[in-house]
Amino acid sequence: MKRDSSAPKTRLVGEAAGLDARALTRLRVLNCIRNMEDASRTDIAAALKLSPATVTFVTSGLMAGGLIEELSSPSAPDTAKRGRPRVALRLSKGAFHVAGIKISRQEMSILILDFGGREVAQLITKLPEPCMEPLVMVQTIRQGVTEACAQFNVSIDRLAGISIGLAGQIDSARNFVHWSSSLTERSVDLGALLAAHIPCAAFVENDANLVAKAEQLFGKARGLNNFLVVTVEFGVGLGIVLDGHLHRGERGCGAELGHTKVSLHGPECQCGQKGCLEAYVGTHGLLNRGRQIADGAQINSVRDLVQRANQGNAEAALVLEEAGQMFALGLSNLINLFDPESIIVSGAEHRIAHLHTETVFDQIRNSVVKVDAPLPEIQVHHGDDLMWARGAAAMGIELVSALKVKELA
Ligand SMILES: [Zn+2]
Image 1 (tube, rainbow, N blue to C red):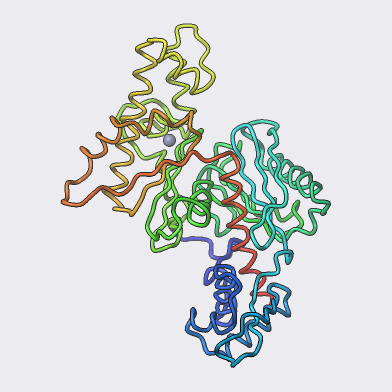
Image 2 (cartoon, protein in one colour):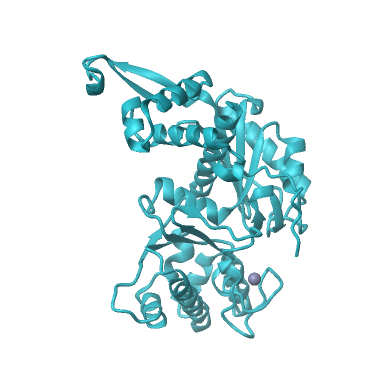
C-alpha cells in the first residue's frame, strides 16, 4: 500500500525533523549541555569529539538564540586556557515552556515544564466524557492548558509546544490517530485540529511511548539502551526502546501489546476483536469479566474485584488469577521476541498487584526459551498519575529543541 508522502510532518526529532548537518550539530551540543552540569566549551569538544572552533561557533549561535547562557566562575580556571576564568555553559531555563498532557479515561493531567525540565505548574482535571469527539478533545485540551498556564501567570500564547499522550494507534510523525479509545471516531487528523485551535507547536504520541520516555529520562531505565515498558491501566500498552531510540513501527501502529492475541475464543476486546491480552488484563476487560460473575455485587473498580476475591469469592479469584496467567504469557512472548535488558511494568499499585506475584514470575520462567543465562530484569514501577504527563513534557522539550535549532539556521 502506498503512503501519502504529502501528509504534513509535524512530529520531528533530529534527522526526522529534516535537520541539516549544522542543525544536528547544534542539537547535539545543546543536548550535551543539558546532560553535563556546567560544561565548558573544552568539555563539550572532548565529549562530542568536535574541534574547539566548531564548538565556539555553535555555542555562540545557541547563545544568540537565547537557548544557553554563560556562567563565569573565576575560582575554577580552565586548565586548557592557562588560568583564564573557566566559562561554563548552561541552558537558559526560561527560554521556553512546554506542556505535557496525558488524556486518561476520566481525567486529563497537565504538567508545564521550563526548558531546563523544571516543573512550574500542574493540573489534574476531570474530562467531560471518557470518549470524546475530536473537536471536544482539542477544546478540552486548550481549556486545561490555559488554566495550567494561569497558575504561573503566563498566557498559553507563550508556550513553545504542547505534547499529548493518548492511548491507541498513533502515527506521531503526522499527529494522526488511527484509533484511540478516547476518541469517538477512527482515522482522525488531530494535527490539523490542534493547529487550528492551539497557538503553538503540538505533538501527539502513544501514551506508553511517553512512559518509556519518562523511564529513560527520569526513572528506572536511566542508562539502559534496550528496554520495554509495559503499562497497565484501562488498556495494556507497550513502549519499545531499542539502541536508545523509541521504536514505533512503520505506520505508528506497532507495540500494541494489549491487542496481541492470547486466546482463540477469548472475551471481546474494546477494539472489537476477540482474545486480546488486554481483554483479560486491562482494567476495562477485567471489570467486564468481574461484572459477569458478580451475582449482584457492585464491581466498579479493580479494588472491588480484589475485595470480592479476598472475601472468598472463587470466581472473582479466578478472574484475577487468569489475568495474571495471561499477563505472564504476554511478558514471556516479549522476552522471546526482544530479549531486552529490562522490562518495566508500570501502573498504579492497586491495578497491578495481582500481576507481579511469584506465581506469575514462575510462569514467565516456564514460558521463555531456556538458555543458560538469567532472565531479563522485570521491574515494577508504581507511577503516579503525573508520570505520563512528565513523559509527554520531556518529549515536548526534545521536539521543541529540534524546532528551535532549526530556526537558528
Ligand atoms: Zn483488542
